[in-house]
Length: 276
Image (cartoon, rainbow, N blue to C red):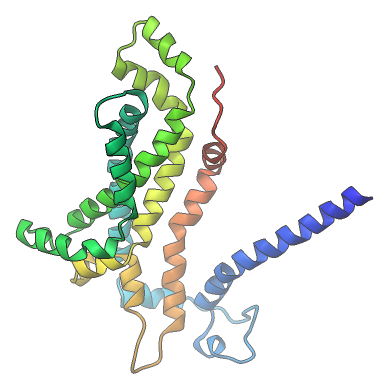
């Protein structure tokens, strides 16, 4: 009886937590399909009876949210691919080899991650101005990769360190070179870590605002967070429906990633033992 009561309490608490976190998503979706009068109605319509797609039509036609979405998708995807390619091999070297200055480089990587990005805006701006990278998507990719590499290396080192040394010794006995051991042994075992790190890097680049605000300034180079913020009006009524519609579009990658990589996410966060 006591155990059943505990399960009931836990189930109720989990349901409340789920409701707490899912309600903002529901409210954004609901607002994006409400009519303008229904959005500002008090008391609010918790379940909209009249649906409209005009807000989506407006953000795609007037605010070019489709082009901005592709810009963000391109930058976030390129950042993720480059970061994973660099850090899977870099973290393997930090984890597997002992060399002079190893600890210094590891601590330097962690310290760099702790530096707020806003402190680097002026140096980035001056360097990119001289290099011709201002107001370019490639410049944003460089900045985002630089910011993501310390975190990715730190995460991958944790996955590599959990692998038993016997599997690497077995690969060497079988005649594998160090690169062959990395490609045939370490890399397949770290797939859950690649999934987790890729999601974190992708969402970090997808949601970043301050650096893109300073380093890009033309409409055709805007990213999604900046485009959504530009919808807020100061002297006129803020288009809440359009903002909700743009926010719904911005949630698509997070929803797709959570649904398609759930297995790898669970494996990545619970990694700690490797079956031989």
